Image (cartoon, rainbow, N blue to C red):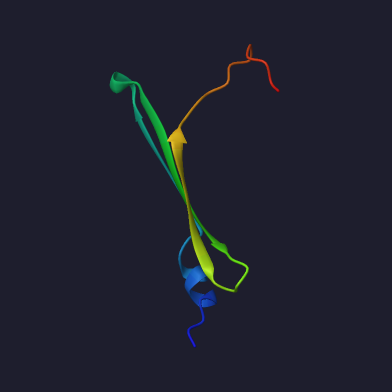
Length: 61
């Protein structure tokens, strides 16, 4: 049987990339994470979206 534990130690578990282009008003992020699942395997979690900044004047909920 293949053991995935040594494989995870060699490669990073988290990766985050950002793309910022002020001329096109583009601020995006891409994030990938490897997480253990409930069945003893691994899952790749992908997230992406816009980078937003909160100014001190904006209310926090």
